[in-house]
Structure formats: C-alpha cells, structure tokens
Length: 290
Image (cartoon, rainbow, N blue to C red):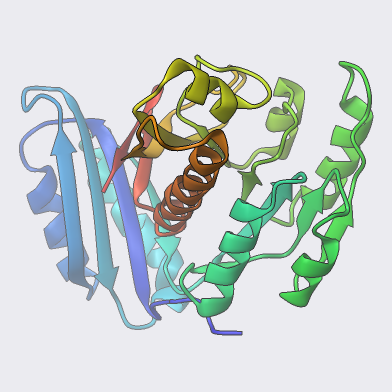
C-alpha cells in the first residue's frame, strides 16, 4: 500500500473573520519570526472594507511538531489584534477517514483504490455498511469492514448508536459513499466531526428511486454530481464540489447511470482530497475552496 502524500514539518494555517488592512503583513511577518517559510498562500475577501475575509497559508517550519505549542501562542497573540478566528493543522499527520456505504459500491471502491495508490492523504480506519455485499472487496484493501444492518421504520436510533460507538473518537471525518440512509441531527451532533456526502445533481428534481430513468424520460441534457457537507437539512449542506457531463437523447437510462457514477466518483474524490488538505473553509451555508 502506498503511503499517503504527506509533508514533514509543514503546517496549514486557516484564518477567517472581518477584513481590514494589515492582515497579510502581520501573518507573513509572524511566520518569518517563528522561523517558518511560506510555501503556499491563498486569500479571499468579499468586501475589502470590513467584509468576510479568508486565508490559507501553508508554511515549512523545521521542528514544527515539537514547537507547536509555542507557535500557536505566537499566532494567537498576533491574530487577537485583528479579532480573527484561526486553526492550525500538521500537514504530516493524515486525517482519519471513515466511509459509510450501502449496496452501490462505485464511490466506496474508488476511494479505497485512490487511497491505496497514495492519492489521498488519509488513513481509512474502517468502512461501515448496512449491507454485506462489499465486505470482501473492502477487506481486500486491508481495511476493516463493519456491518450495521438498517432498522425498518423512521426510528434509526438503534443502528445510529452502533455506528456512533464505532466512530466516536476514532475518526476525523466521515464520507457517505452512496450511503442510502438519512442521518439524524442527534447522530451528527454526537459524532462531532465533518460528514461529506455525494449525490446526483438532479435534486430537488427526480427524488427517490431510479433518478436516471426519470431523467431519461424527461429528456435531460446535463447530468452531474454534488458533494457537500451534511447538516440537519437533507441535501442542503455547504457545497464543496460539483461537475456535469452532457448527454443526448440517444443515451439510455443505463448509460446515464453509468456516466453519472463516473461523475460521482470524480466529484467525491476531489471533495475528499480538498477537505483532507484543509482547502475548504465553511462560511454559513457555503464554502470557500482554495
């Protein structure tokens, strides 16, 4: 198995708050003062006179892990004067990504394949599914597989409690790789880490089973996929990535589904990569992706 792409002694600083003069200069000077060297810098402001401001800085600093407490003290001291919120991550430490899946395995196996190639800077401590159809495929990647059967009826608390027991404290984020269950607000609150979902981009049209058959009957000319963070509002969380492909009247419903699955794989893998690299900043119900 290839090792994840990691950068020893690299850190990522995320800054956001109200825009004002001097932020870039202060952050750059602070990184220089602590012995760091900036290797990537992105920023965005929606209004230079007090609008929302976002910044992502990746810097190299020898001995970062050992000196992290001192570095965080310096960051806090500098940014307190600007009343900015911030977070700091160690780019040498891969995030722990759990995957929830159901019967459709195209997104699940694609993520595992990309992880095995070293294309995703994550570890995969577990896959949880409400079906056993993909168990052997998952285990062939050396990843633990757990089966938590779905519960009939609207009350999913029993199955959610079992899933939460497996995940709690063991993962940094969760990916729903075509997991065909609705997660409750209580589950999301108890989990306490980001959850990323993928679905076709027809929503709110063609809800329910056989969306590509419905799309074919309607004569759609574009199909696509959306990846977003999961919130209490079903399929309405902050969008991370989207993509589309053109189709024609000659494409069958099966061909639409096949091409749709390709787009879903690509969109989800990009969303996972960007999240793992700390490129996504949530702001209200939308995202800034650097």
